[in-house]
Image (cartoon, rainbow, N blue to C red; front, side, top):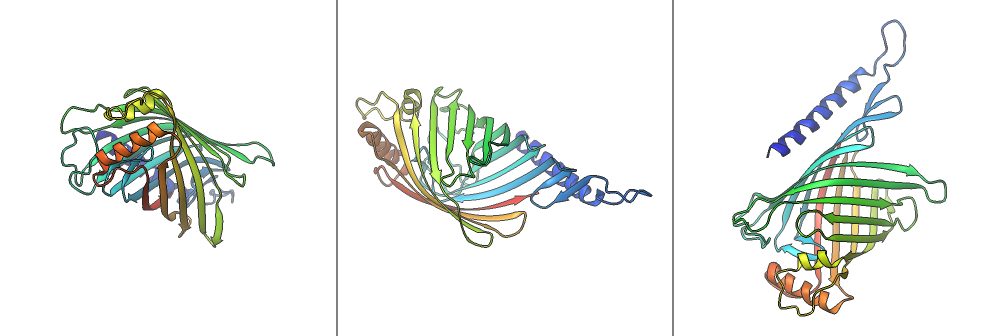
Length: 305
């Protein structure tokens, strides 16, 4: 919890600095010029045209705890998060997953985690948009390191660490995104996710974004995640994992407050052994079915400073 407190303090410092900077945009005594510092809701503190610091808080609700298109918890979860960004490049963040019910099915000997967090993630990264010209627009690059702390009732599953890389071309019509996740501790596996989508502006400050995505995992990733499913014979390879169809609705209520909602369909479509493994996993941790597909949804609120 020290990590949570440190990031919370950093965010408070950022907000305090933002309010100070807003007041600092005044005329210098006797010169009639601006001090150069400014603050705008949703954009943070800037000096001239240079971004200095901004902060973001979010709270999400998901109808089920999903990972790689399979069920890691059959009941709803709450996901709070916070981040602080310096100079539009370096950011620090923290995110937690809270169970809202007893015995939510998350593997690893968690016991009763109702009302308590099941994961606590601390991250540091660099993110920036690079202009590739009129034809391609901006390339968004996000590279981060994340430490995931897992509180345990029984000492069955240890903490882990990840390296994550995300590349996206959001100015193109199909908005392609490529995400790569490398697990550094649990199984040393790699997961890759590719997505295509498009953002439609259906009203002022209201957008709708349908998307389709496909996940891939190497043999270390798939064997590590489905390691307890010994009943699936011949499951010893990586390949095509989860297919996702998703629709996001987002409404910018103000410059700094955004509301979101989504619905998503997950399935394992292209590999027979992978389908059998996913069905067995859903049956083991989902608690009420052993099918390969799932439909989930969620709500979110984001405040930017």
